[in-house]
Length: 549
Ligand SMILES: Cc1cc2nc3c(=O)[nH]c(=O)nc-3n(C[C@H](O)[C@H](O)[C@H](O)COP(=O)(O)OP(=O)(O)OC[C@H]3O[C@@H](n4cnc5c(N)ncnc54)[C@H](O)[C@@H]3O)c2cc1C
Image (tube, rainbow, N blue to C red; front, side, top):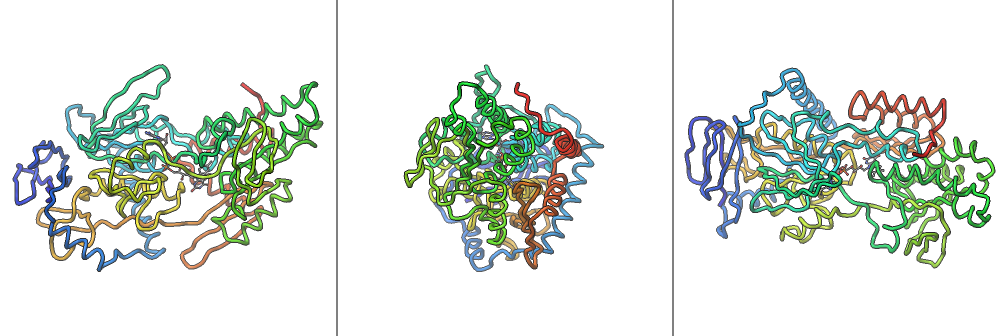
């Protein structure tokens, strides 16, 4: 049986399985657990150990859920509702900026712990109302990273600091802890963390009323021997920084007089493993760097340079329509990027890449961009929740982003898979999910219990419940796909834009201008926009900076 608690002002009353709570007071539920609420906030608390009895409300809902599928909005009504949501978010921003909340050290608000500072967490933090929640962000990095431009920073087209925003700028009213969450005690509602400041070996626990898991994905090596030791990844700023250094280093090394021709050829062979957007965009950026800058500064070596792109499938950029995939292949051919399809890497040594068919490719630098794997924390959580047995490396969540099998825990972005059909692991999805979840919190929706039985209004398990009023069902998360873009080199890009009616496909130089304007618009702050524009201008006029330090 479930027990839920409602903040309505006055005093605490137990009614059947309900507890009504006074504004800002701390109450205990039937199990004796402390339940703290802020004003006008409805929070429902499920018993930690569900009783074996069947809950008639839940049972009825499950039946109805099956009978009445939740209606999805059309493309245009979805766009409209996003516009309305954005205005709502802007009001929260405005209030935060011009009427900053008073800091009251003793005020007890529900603690919302957020794991991560990536796309999903960043958009949640921007929108969340810190007047209602005590938000604690736990992440090993204190900044948001605009990942789509990471390949540009790895070759110096754009500087590292231009695509990051410190987390405290996004919302100064959240508490930030520079740490990894290493475990979660779902019973005690505690996130167990380890400090990520070098030399500091602190381990501590953070209590949460609600936990939002947004730890993203790890790079998937598919257990291929040698990948971890010898390949570069492209996930974090530190990876891009390492790559930028290593590329120029290969040229410096190949310039030594005692290097044989064969060794020179090996050192200047750049291999990218993975024909998805990350691999292709990096290969494209690398090509530009080689042709526009390195060719000028290392004219004697340039004849020995080659770029290979290995893809295990039979095409690249498979998210795009076939005609666009062919255009990308043709553009790579013209750029002298050798695309080798059906190439499955079985081993990487310090000097060679071995393929399944026995081919050995000597290489100087290899970048591994072959797909997403599971973060250690996600793996641990999956192993602790029996209801997640069917999960395939991502936490299964319902349409309201609640993690299956545990109460008060939500997951979004790359670490979550929405049932029944998982959404793609992209920044677009993660960003929309973060803002959506923040709105659920801001708009008083009950987030931890089934809808109270009333007027047949129980198709979904979330409701905004106001005393005397009828529950209002929260809309489930719906992804608004605006299309996909990819840079393919030589100042050309591809776009597949969704309009709700048809897909618009385009590729070429004009699409590159579209790509640039979208990436500028999508930057998370005005500062980032200015910096990226300035970097593009600098690169065009002076070339990329190749100094090593
Ligand atoms: C090079 C590159 C290019 C891309 N280009 C595009 C693109 O053009 N378009 C697109 O839509 N998508 C793109 N993506 C994919 C996109 O970046 C991801 O889908 C998106 O970042 C997912 O967001 P997220 O919030 O789930 O995870 P992330 O953004 O990866 O954030 C995860 C956060 O969790 C933190 N974290 C990790 N472990 C822990 C822990 N144990 N405890 C606490 N915090 C932890 C990390 O430090 C990080 O802050 C690209 C990805 C890469 C790598």
